[in-house]
Image 1 (cartoon, rainbow, N blue to C red):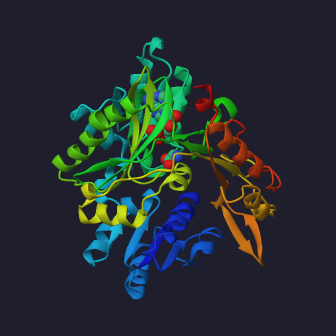
Image 2 (cartoon, rainbow, N blue to C red):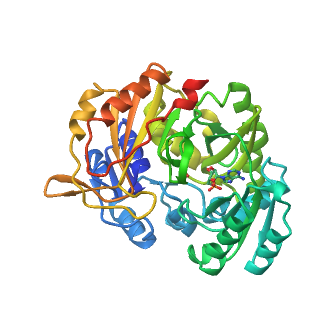
Length: 428
Ligand code: AMP
Ligand code: GLY
C-alpha cells in the first residue's frame, strides 16, 4: 500500500514511523513532513491546508490510505473531499471535526447529552461578556475564558482576577488576537484536578480506547508558566485506573460518538478527550478530533497492533473485529523546545548529537522530529517544539532515566525542556 501522512510535526513523524513498520505498507509519503519523516519515506512539499494540492497528489500517486495529523485540514473538510473521489482517508468529516473547531459547539453537545464538563456561558459581544464579569462573585475565581475557534492552543485564559478576565476578553474580542476564532467566547468554571488525555478510535459505531496517556502543557517544571502545545507525555498514565477508564468510556467517549450521530454528524477517526480528573471522576476540558501531540509519540512506541489495520477498520466500519495490543512497558517523550517558546522563538539553530542520542538508547529510544529543517546535510531548528525524545522502559522510572539520558546528548543553543516529565506517575 502507498500511504500519505498529512502534517509536519512530531505526531506526524511518529505516525510515518509506525506506518512504515506495517507489512502492508510499501511506501510512506509525508506532506510537507520534516527531516524525521524523510527517514521513513519521501517528503512532498505540499502544505497541510492545501487541500486541492494534496488531493491532486493522492490521485496522481494512487495513494491507498491518507492519514491526517493536524486539525486544520480536518476542519476544512479534507476527508469529505478525498472520499468524494473514492480515496480512503483516516479522520472525521468536516461536520465531525466541528467537535474540535468550535468550543461552543462541543460545550453545547456535552450539556445536551449529559457528558460531564464545566458549567459555561457563551458570548458573542465583548460588552455582554464584560458585563457578565462585572457581576461575577469573586468566589467563582479563577475563571476560564476561551476563544470559540482554533487558536493553536493559545486561545485559553485561566483568569485569577476580574482584571485578568477583563483583559482576556479584550484580547480575544476587541484586539482580535485570534482573528475570527474570537468572534464568540466561552466563559467556564475552573476545574481542579490532574489532567489526562483519553484517546480512542472509532468507526462511528464501535469505540475502542487507546492506552492511557498524560501530557504536560505548561512550559516549566511543576506546571508553571504559560501553556504550550505539550512539553512531554507518557503512557500508561496511572491516574487513569482501569475502573476510571471504563467509566470514561461509558460516560464520555461512547456518549460523545452517539451524540454526534444523533446530530447528523457521524464521527469516525480519533476522538481525543482532554480530561480533568478529581477524586476518581473525570470531566471533559475539550474534545479533539485527531491524535494528540506529543501523546502520539509514546502511544505509538507501545502499540503492537498494525496501525494500518486499525485505520482501515475505522474507515470501513469494522472496528469491532480489531483488538488493540500494547507493549507492557512505559513510554515517555521529552520535548526539546527553542529558546523563547511558547512566545516568539529563535530559528535556524544548529542541532548536534541526534545520532548519539538514539545510540545511547540501544534500540529503545527514538528521537522524533517536530520543528526541524535540513540544510546542506545539517539539521537546524525551525519551530517552537523541536524534538521529542521518546524512550521505552520497564517502568516509569526506567523510561524517565532513558529519555533524559538521550535528551542530554542533544545540543542546540537556547534549548529548553522540562526536567519533570513523568513525575506525577512516579508520585503515585
Ligand atoms: P483546552 O484547549 O480547552 O483543552 O484548554 C487548554 C488547557 O487549559 C487545558 O489543557 C487545561 O490545562 C486548561 N483548562 C481549560 N479549561 C479548563 C477548565 N475549565 N478548568 C481548568 N483548566 C482548564
Ligand atoms: N497535546 C495536546 C494536543 O495535542 O492538543
